Image (tube, rainbow, N blue to C red; front, side, top):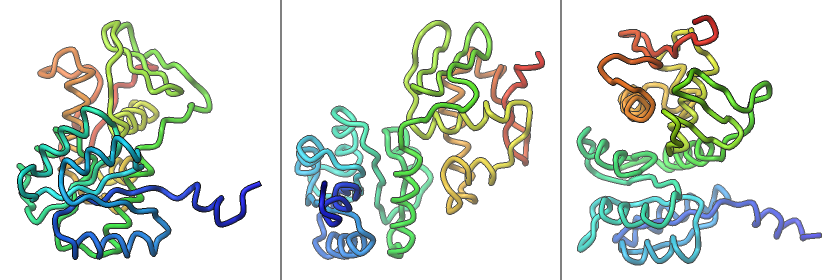
Length: 243
């Protein structure tokens, strides 16, 4: 039997901090370690890729503005070898930068300067929502129609006879929509349930991920079959049980 300290250590999440500024690394490291996270560091993109490959962290905090190889290029290389959750750290708060990072596979964005409390909260929220899906208590495989089916146990999504790949957050969003099929879910409800309460006002995230989902599951984006927009309110999944 493991000693209590060793047992606790075995369950502490490992976070990789990537930044070219030592004072930022130290600041983030101290605050994460105070919250019982294990921490490793890298000062540039190539080191980060090596750390991801060798140490297999549970999450990466990745600075955008780094010399030689910036955070976007580093993210691209990380995504070639790993699906580890990545939170981008940046001094820029433009919608274009956020969309670019999320399109390339980032899981969240935190704008500098940030408080330790905000950062830790975001890290925990990302770790929660990127956990593997669990089986539905009532249904494992759900067939929506002859075009779309979802396996809540394995996370498999079959579209037009082919298995597609969804990010963990995309799958959580789809699952929550399906489990409430026929009901209009307000923006803040979806954000709180899928991302966490601290994201309840981040409507731009929700719009972006609804768009990602539609591109992957809808046969015709101009005429949605599954996910409908209730303008100014939220989104509704087709009531397939009563079609």
